[in-house]
Length: 448
Image (cartoon, rainbow, N blue to C red):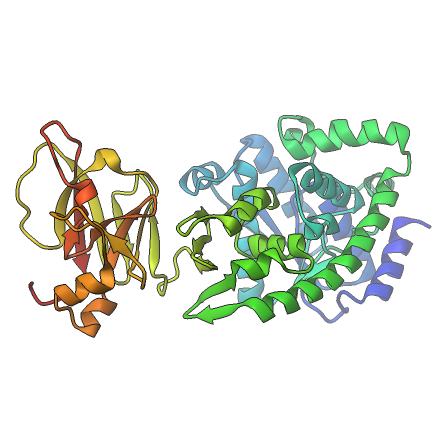
C-alpha cells in the first residue's frame, strides 16, 4: 500500500481531525514536513503552514524559508513566517541551540493557534523519529514515561505520520517530485540525536533488521503500562500528600515504604522538573537529616524532619529560599535579602543589617521561616537556646513570631533575622572574611 492510501486509512481509524477543522502545519522545509503538506493537500484538508527561520545557517536558512513559501503560494496555502535569533535566545536563557529552537517554535505555534483559531497543530514526526527519541531517553536514563516515545497527540498537538517510516516518506517525495530542503546540520554526529540516527541505529539494524517496527511495538506496550502505573502511583501520592498554600508535603517514611516506590519517586521527580538520573540523590534525601535540599529549574525538594517538602522555585507562598554563593540579592514577596563582602568591621546601622565571619559558611544558604524546635547559639552565649524560648525572652508578640525569618547554613542558624546572629558566626579577629547581611522587609516592623 502506498503512503497516500496508508495515510487516509490511518486518519480514518484515528480520527485526529476532520475536514472542517482548521489545521496549522509546522513546516521546516525538510522532506518530512513537505510530504505531510502534500498529503493534507491531496486529501482535501484545510490547513496553513508555519515556518520559523532561526537564522543559524545564513543563506541556507533563507532557502529553507523560501521553499516553504513557494510551495504554499503555488498551492494557494497560507504560510506564516517568523525570523528569530535562536543563538541570542539560547545564550540569554542558558539553553542549547536545539532546546532554544524547540522552545521558540512551539511557543510561536501555540500563540498562532490561539490568535488565528487553529484547532490542531501538526508536526511531521515519523516512526524513525520515535525510535530515536526512545533510544535517546533510554541511554540518558528515564522512567516508564520516557519509554513511551513521541505521543501521537498531546492536547492540540498531533503527529499523524508516526505510523510510517523515513523510507516510505522518501519514496513518496521522490515519486511526487515534492520540493524540499536538506538541513546539513542533520548530517553531523556532534549532536546526540544525529549520532543515534546516523551511527547507532544503522549498527543495530545490521543485527536486528526489524528494529524500527519492533521498537514501535514496544513503545505501544509501554504506553499501556504507563497508563496503569500512573493510575496506581496517583492513588498512592494522593493518599500520602498534604497540601498547604501551594506547597506539597509527603511523609518520608511513607515514601520509603510505598508500593511501587521507585515509580512513585520518579513521578515526584518528573512532575517537579527533575530528571530520572537524580533518583539516587532523591533516595538519599529521604533518609537524610533535616535541611537536605534538591533543586530543579522549577522546584525545590527539602527534607524537613520527617517530611519531604516540594515547592515551586518561584512560588510566592514559598517560605524558604535557596541562596547560592553567587546570589547577592534574593527577592521574595516578604522582603529582599542581600549579602556583600566588606573589608572591615564596623557597627551596623540597623537591626536588619549584620556583619559576620563568612569563613564558617557552607553554601547553599537557606532563608526560611522559623519553625518549632529550631535552636541557635545567641551572640554572647556559650549554650544553645531554642527559638521559642528566645522569643519569650525578647518579648515578641505572636504576630512578630510569625514574621520571623532565619538564615541557615549547613543546618546551623546563622542569623535570626532582625534579632541576633549566632555566636558561631561572630567576628573574632582581624583578617576574618567579613560578610554583610541585609534584610529589607516589605512590611515595616516596630524598632526593637
